Length: 193
Length: 157
Image (cartoon, rainbow over all chains, first blue to last red; front, top):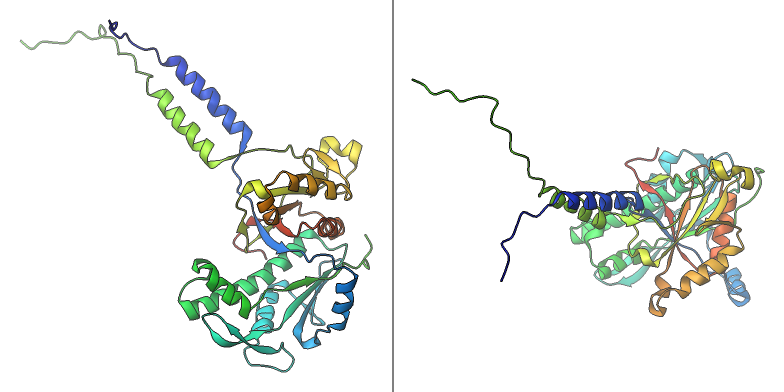
């Protein structure tokens, strides 16, 4: 026989729930981890090193970015403000007017595009040991932005969609046309610590 | 004759608190879903720079963290004010990174090891010298996928 149900006292339940709530408030963090993704080059063994020395990269194909210990930029031998870096990197990579001093274009078979011109340009970044991390990230950010904008423009032109909305194969095809290569030399130590 | 109610005699009925736990439980579920458990106690100042081109780090289980920054006030007597590296819950040297990476790697499933990412959480006031050393150590440990931790901002200059 079931007993007639009486009033259930729910007041302590709220206390327990509050306790749990406070535990979760204290023990957890809200932040989502975001950041700039990069791939480091593997350390070459001796055989590879010799091959690399043979393989000369033409000067016109390299976009040289130097940051000194007082956070000043030297781009292709000229001092530059950080706000102009994105545009000049974009112009360098895409080489829209086929200039002699900007990187060579190579005809390649790319899925979705057929025979197209792909850039051979690479970016070389070198910093000093005394460069601030803040400046370094700004430069990395601008260079990434340059590539991202080129990828996005091309995606819009070809597929009518933003780069982030494309599928993996389409992304790879665009990555073949504007390959993102940022090579980093070992930092110098000229500015002192 | 109009009837008047006798004022003051009637007591206000007590508010039922039965629905209060439900509301609190709802809040708990919200916090459980939208937050992550804090894993390490930060011993260094860690204010990451801002950037516009950030990507979200997915699969937190594949990420190992390296913190770099000035030791916090209470550790400064012992460790000085120069930027230091923190791995897990203790200060470390650059040489310790290799062991750290290999233990982190062993914890992962073999098929997922190539996807391992190292997140560099570096304070904005750090110079590149120590960061370069860490990067070189990571290359030697062949942990090549890295992520410079940064907050998303609208503009950087």
